[in-house]
Image (tube, rainbow, N blue to C red; front, side):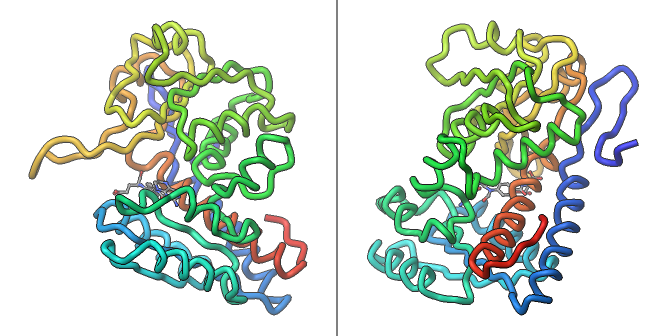
Length: 304
Ligand SMILES: Nc1nc2c(c(=O)[nH]1)N[C@@H](CN(C=O)c1ccc(C(=O)N[C@@H](CCC(=O)O)C(=O)O)cc1)CN2
């Protein structure tokens, strides 16, 4: 029995993202060990130019994850009222720094900063987020180098849940550069853990329920709390909830996804929770991309 899948009588199995992320971290730790034998210590730089508390939390979590697996983490914080030239100069320095194998610009950047220009400035060989146009282009043309972390995490969760992705009908709700578009391209690939038929829905899709109701797999990354409900889903479908929305105030404040978890659990065969689903996988795949970046730059073969 797969420890990452919790069976619940009469309700959808829960796909435990924390458990899958822990096993990814284990294999990353082993890969870091192999790099160490070749004299390489992988380094990740996180860059934060925002005072959004959620972004601050995510960056802290990423630093802690790095420490756990033996990746050296370097953190740069830039004042939100600094000119964007300071951010660009920081990226230039990190590009040149041999101790840095991966660069992560935490999104969203503070208002007024040209985010696409910042992402374009990252050396594509250090672009462990997979957001540089060169890496986007490589994914789209079927020759991926770095793939964005959340789509990689979603793909791994589907595999762990025993979904036969080739030939399945996948509906993605959300067309962001961060999740929807790269995930569609990833699952359209010809590999054994892809080769799906993919539909991408968005805020202008007419009759969302009609699309969702015929999917084997539904991935929701729309940023709208509880957008997808059980009555929209096909019986036995697999549901991956990428949304993380804070709702309520004070003691009632809680995190919910883009899926109505209770009603979806009555219909789906498996579902990810929020928190504890896709979020931990995003962080785990960042670690994997970082060791791969370090191996590529050092010319060392690792199997991660
Ligand atoms: N440069 C990037 N910026 C952003 C990315 C990204 O992949 N690269 N993704 C999102 C946010 N994100 C990563 O930065 C992220 C979101 C959520 C989690 C996570 O572990 N969530 C936990 C809950 C945490 C909490 O208590 O708040 C969970 O879901 O269990 C990690 C990373 C936007 N920006």
